[in-house]
Image (cartoon, rainbow, N blue to C red; front, side, top):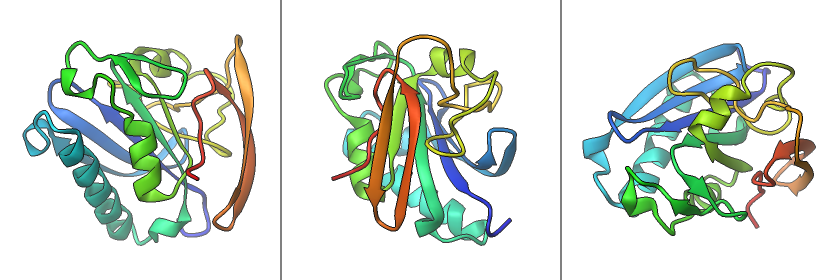
Length: 178
């Protein structure tokens, strides 16, 4: 497994909590964990802190190092602004106006993308941007997140922290922390 790329996928749910997976490609998941909803309740600070803790723990358990993480993909219910902040998260109202993508990117130091969970699930087919940008999961399928699709997209490029890369991402929501 070492030497292969590593991506973190997060599926934020209104019911059970946040599912976290480690992937080397959209079809190869090699680690998973669950952050139960009661561990972050309705608090963005607790959600970010617990996600960071769970991701680091899962990476260690897989025999990898956190600095090997190439990107994080978040699938979440809700509508998002162009900067990735929540415009409306009807069943997770504590996220309204919050920017989980930016906060997690700042804490982890990794390019991070967020997308509506239904869209992420619908885009799981076809070639994936996962190898160069983000991987994630849909609620049921654990499918590739950030997949290449037809329609509006933008090119993103990042450099720094030992990596250089680029990919085309839907809705301009892949970012590299500053």
